[in-house]
Image (cartoon, rainbow, N blue to C red; front, side, top):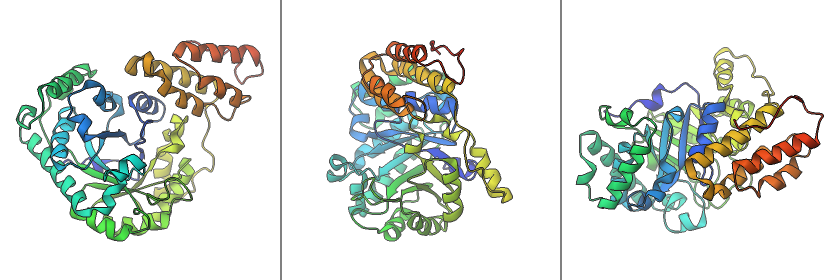
Length: 384
């Protein structure tokens, strides 16, 4: 029996959208620490990488218990690999599996993956079918050794499981199927979401998330929430959860979009960059919708102390999970934190050249030494 995860989540659902190169384990951990969205997604991971047998290619599938419920997002175009990858995702203890059918990256889409699947609906359905079959076969007890994975892949997966903070939660649980979902766009070079959503419905996913732009738009222009609303009604008619995504920079905006479109919830992506606090008051949206009382127009912003401590904690968390040698990937996050305080632009220029959490602490200490008129003069930039 399929998990009822999506139907059991608080309504409306406010989740962290998957973002390539952004929603790594360290970022998700920080978001869970400061905001706790209703659900989170990993970065998308190529099914070929999942099944290849190299531990470093599984790095995007690391997670902590506090991130739950957590969905693993995968992409590709080989049905056989989707079958195998579904087994791996289940084995690693994820709460759900999502297929990326919306990535607009030229390299991804031109290869026929991501949003490129909008042009090959039969293949999209085949991938969903193989992923669902993989989930069910795993739930019925089929071991990883029986699906054709290389010994090196089995070893890498076992090592990743061993690194899990609470591996006994994975080893000891009764196997059950996890829900399948899809994240997509309005179309390839024009809006065909009505026909496209009708196709996806045939694959019987438990949830469909729609970004309100076509592939050709990339992230230009405005997200079309009227099109999302129209598709959501078709999707919900079949008992499938419909989520909207695009241009949500605050909970006030999320409330407005959900109320107007009738979706079951929204995924926040770029609005969470440098702002893990955005999810702190999701209960206020549910309360406002239930009571009809307007939502507060302005969400409380963290003071300078909280911003600096989050930057340090995030940098240290990234080092602990991914290592100092990869710290260059952390720089963009540090740059996103630098906003809405005096001389933030100057600090951003320094943060994007850092190589360690110690560099971050040194920059913050120098800032404090140079600027005495702060909200909390007693604050000291020390390890979190």
